[in-house]
Length: 59
Image 1 (cartoon, rainbow, N blue to C red):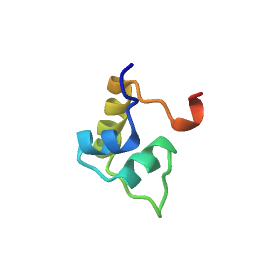
Image 2 (cartoon, one colour):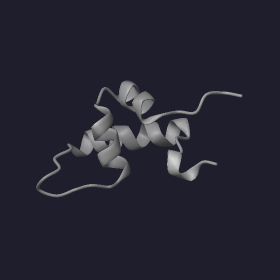
Image 3 (cartoon, helix red, strand yellow):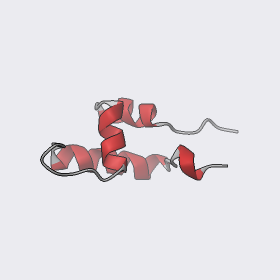
Image 4 (cartoon, rainbow, N blue to C red):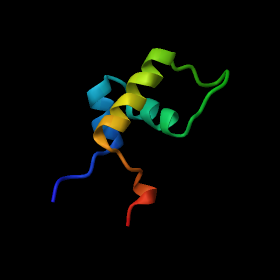
């Protein structure tokens, strides 16, 4: 069985912090969260490409 993709894996693939991946996954936006649209899209693309599934949705 292959290893599950983690937020850390997505962060490494996209060159961002794990916190940024978390913010994107939680769809955080607003004045307190500043993520460039290109960065957000890069993270979302990596999530789709890897089939990432949140730990909360696994069992």
